[in-house]
Length: 347
Ligand code: TRP
Image (tube, rainbow, N blue to C red; front, side, top):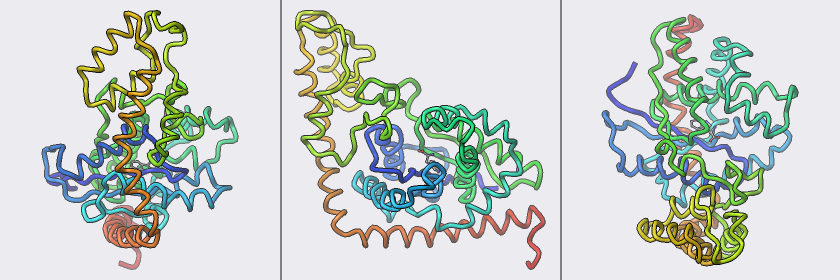
C-alpha cells in the first residue's frame, strides 16, 4: 500500500486520430498535471500515458492495421499538444504482458451480469450494434482497464465523464482483490472535467450528444485550417433561427457550446449570447469567430504534429523507452500479486 505519493495514469484507444472531445475531456487535464498546474494533497511520483492497443482490439480484432497505424497517431496527437516524454512515461499496452496477466486474475472477481450492467459498456454495445454478439473481450474491457491502472498502482486517473463507471468498476475489483488476497491496491480517483461543464461532454458538430469518429461528427486535432472552417460552417445551431432578425436559442447550439469552451474572451461571448437571443445576429458571424478561435488554438498543435510526424522512428523510440520503464513497475506489482494469490511457486 502506498498512500504518501500519487501516481497518475491515462490512456487513449488507438482507433484513429484524436479529436476536440478528447482534447477538452482528458488531454488538457493530463497536461495540466504534467506541468504542475493542478495541485494535489500528495506529490506526484510518476505519470504514465498508455496507448491502449489491446483495448482498441476488443472491438477491432478484424482490423489490426488500423490499430497499428493509430498507435503512432495518438502518440503524435499527445506529443503535439505538449506531452513531454521526459515527464510522462509513454508506453504501449500490449507490450506490457503483466497487464494481461492481472486481467486474467481480475476476471475471476467479477460476474458476467455485473459486466453487462456497466452503463458505459451498455451504451457502446448499443452504438456499435453488437447486441448479444458482443465479443467477450469487449464486454470485459473495464476489467482490463482496471488492470491497466492497478498494474501501475496508479490512483489518479484523468478521464472524460463517460469513463466514470469504468473507474468505479476498477475500484470494485481492487477492493475485491484486497478482501480476498490481502491489502494490495489503493483507491482510484477519476479526475474529471468540472461537473456539467461543456468540457465534460463535447457534442459533435451535428449536435449529437457525443463527438465521435465513428459518428462522423468530429473535429480532429490534425484537421487543416480549411477542414476546420468547413466543419464549423456545417455546425448545428438553432434550426428555427432562419432570418437574421429572429431571436435565436443559445442552449443546445453547438457553436455557443464550443465558444464557451475555447473562446478565451468570455465577456464578448456573453455579449454575443445576449444579442443572439434578442435577434439580429447571424450564424455566419459566429461561425467565423469560432473557426478563427479554433484555428488559433490548433495551429501550433498542427505545426508541431507535422514536424514530429516526419520522424516516426523517433516516436517509436520514445514509446519503446517508456515501455521498458513501465514494465519495471509492472513486474514489481505482479510479483506482489502472485505472492498474495499464493501462485509464487518458484520464489
Ligand atoms: N477507455 C479509455 C477511453 O476510451 C482509454 C483507456 C484505456 C484508459 N485504459 C485506460 C484511460 C486506463 C484511463 C486509464 O478513453
